[in-house]
Amino acid sequence: MTTAFRIRACAKINLSLRVGDVRPDGFHALTTVFQSLALHDTLTVTVRRGPFALTCTDPGVPTDDRNLAWKAARAVWTALGRRGEPRDLAIDIDKHIPMQAGLGGGSSDAAAALVACHHVWTKGGRHLDLPMTAARLGADVPYFLQGGTALGLARGDELYPLVDVPPYWVVLALPPFGVPTADAYGWLDADRAATDSLHAHATQRLLPAWPGRLLAVANDLEGPVVRRHPEIGAVRDLLTRAGAAAASMTGSGSAVFGLFGTKNAADRAARAAAGAGTVAIVTRTVDRRTCQRVHFLFASSSPRHA
Image 1 (cartoon, rainbow, N blue to C red):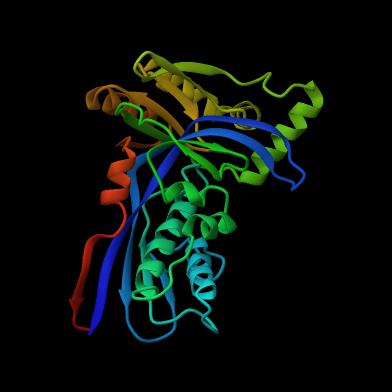
Image 2 (tube, rainbow, N blue to C red):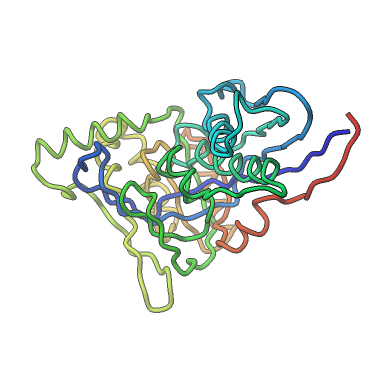
């Protein structure tokens, strides 16, 4: 007899990403506004005897201890004081969030794996501080335990929930290449050394985000990345011309998002983006309550015969 359940791991965009100086720990100081998307990976978690196993539908995703979801399982196992390698659990990732796109897929999978392993291995026992455990895995991972609209400070892991922005349809346009995070920050540092300015190259668009309040949509990494990959700037401008309330690169790229008030407008913009040589995905924003109610531990545990 085995038991299985599923967890959704949502993608994110950075509505705003301002990058400060390098901190003493070697990381840049960040001020960012995260936003969850309906686009998600699905983790199927199976409780059964034997060594821990991780599989994925995308052959390009490592399924050993290089994967953040695997690291998450080990982190929970170790924090609970258990010896050896994790066991008696298998996780399969049905992958839909593109990699190296700035959408947080790996971090979201890790957060979902934390929740899953904690749910299974702490029944009737001690419980862990999951946000603290998540922060050790990566700066973005704690956000995915929360979801919705949130302000991230420090490395992005000091989180403050915000009132959720109103719903938008989202077009994600993905060029046929990824941008490694280390490269994007390296280019930013090089450009700043040449200009001696923190935000000289950041463009912004004001987005109606809360009643009577506007959010400046801007990404300090966008300028340095666009200078090396002008295709990203071109697709951002295409989404703007298509009527996006705001368009920007998310995270370190390479994905660009555009926010639209209606699905019809988003569909038209997606067709234009696809015609320009990108992979275009239409999704929508989701609020914090939806993330916490639906995207974690949905389809509750149900027995099935092995």
